[in-house]
Length: 240
Image (cartoon, rainbow, N blue to C red; front, side, top):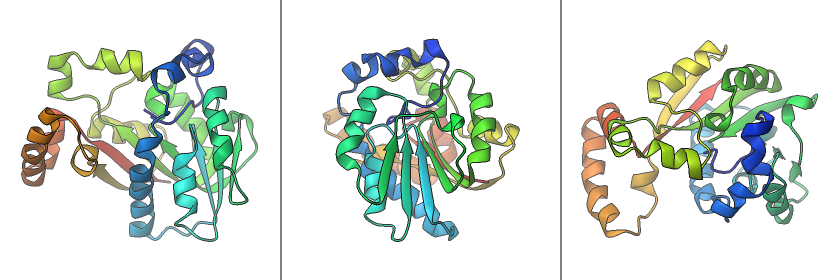
């Protein structure tokens, strides 16, 4: 998901984010994943030595990613845009002099930032091509985090429909289709990396504990093949 978000959508698609349905299914708005996501974002910023004084997140959800980044990146102003009233209410406790939140559609605002974050968002957007093309004008650099839902296992298990119902994912990507989508929308890809949540975030089930070391070995030996086969990873992309 955007696991933290309610980005620009058409009226019907956005209903679950504004009427409380999404909040009922995801009470924390996935803030438990935010520290890990913030580390992935900061790592790709530092790797590419991006000069920034302003960071915006579209579909910021509960705002915890920006809050985490504000504590580790100095001399930067942080702004979050969110369409869900329930998520925006969660943002309020995280606002301070460095971090500001708005219950608005960024596409309706005349704003421009050094860096825009789109973290688990555009897979929720009906017209994701139109959304990405419009978003391009809002910053110099963009960081996308894209769930790679489409894998051999997800198709065999039929889990894509579960994500559609519980998380609101409308579109499903592989690494290749995600990158081509950004290029088709006019973006220049600067860098891209897998983010390995299944390896790096502790698992609590016995099945997960058994599978984790096997996945880790497979990923080390053949990362592209492993992700195509099993999923369990996302893609972080730095673009202009």
